[in-house]
Image 1 (cartoon, rainbow, N blue to C red):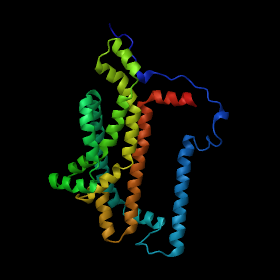
Image 2 (image 1 turned 180 degrees about the vertical axis):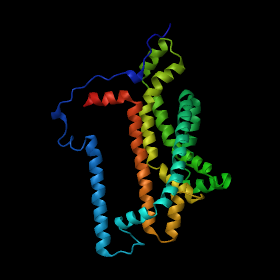
Image 3 (image 1 turned 90 degrees about the vertical axis):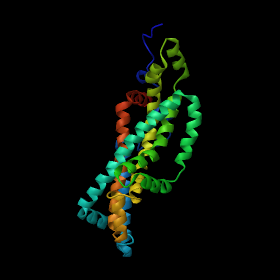
Image 4 (image 1 turned 90 degrees about the horizontal axis):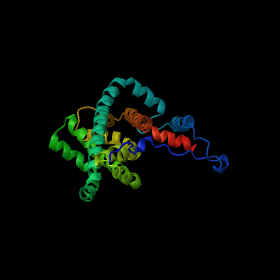
Length: 286
């Protein structure tokens, strides 16, 4: 039998669900809009920085112990060229490490989804490998492969790969069995079922795994520089710490936070671009 109209999970539009406003708990709509999701955290950061500034100014703390936010900002701006150069080196390791992690996770998860015996054998090994502390793994990678950027990229990819792999694999295995059986009964090959059903089903979980990865991948890149690199935010922070320039250490930390938040925000843009059916589902639930 020829498959003339295959099931496509991506094009499936969920039925609209009427949700009366009175069923929502009191205060549920407050702060739920996209603007408030940005405004409230920014306001909280401003309040924390103001408290920090007042506390350091009123107690006359030694700046080498805890500099004020204004001192951090002015010192960071004065050292912007050095921080910019270090940021580019760290960003390079982070981006390439993330790309390699995504590619490896997609490949491994797809193979494990197809071959159940391999999944039962390899998945525990991956989890065990993830339990190796990066503080042990990083020096070994440097000893084996040297101080160039490539070993750092590999280390970041290894550290970031497991959450992506498990999330993607879970998504691939959670495809609707009835839809799977329907497609196979209509003559769809396993490869077509994989492309038309399992991948669209797995994408939301994969993006969630990517979102988790972006929360620590910058830290992994900076730590990989600590154990052996010629440039980067990790080297910059280590140097400034040895010089008791705590203000510049904090400035580099804030830059790493901004990079992490930017990568985290990009996952929402990616979700918006790749999952139009999720936008329709969320719109139907409003």
